[in-house]
Length: 137
Ligand SMILES: [Zn+2]
Image (tube, rainbow, N blue to C red; front, top):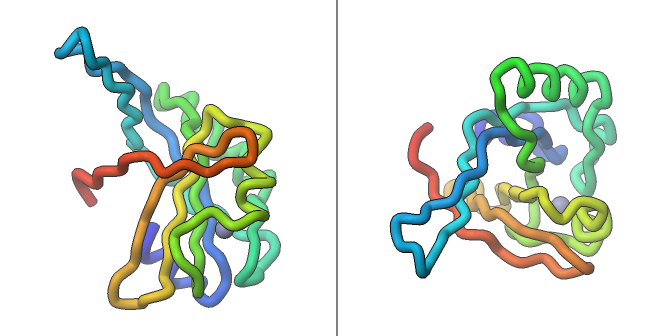
């Protein structure tokens, strides 16, 4: 994700994430919903700008076919912010509002040496951070 985002900088990079959802119920009083990202798809930003993105529909379809083949669930999408923080913009919230089951990852390259990746849940026009832990790669 990071090397792709750097390779298309200063344009926004984008793509899809896929994996599985499960519930950690080791503590029955505090069930935790866990979303495990197993695959990240790097797609072309059809807009080729540094301020917004649209996924290439052909590549999008190919990625969905690949997810089905590997029994992965579509979990959301990701894009980079070449020059701004890892925070949902008004435009990001507007675009995300049609699907509140998805996770929206934003990778900020504002500080080239310290890239920042956050995940967001967007519902009713409000973007809320989700806990994100990188365990490999
Ligand atoms: Zn954005």
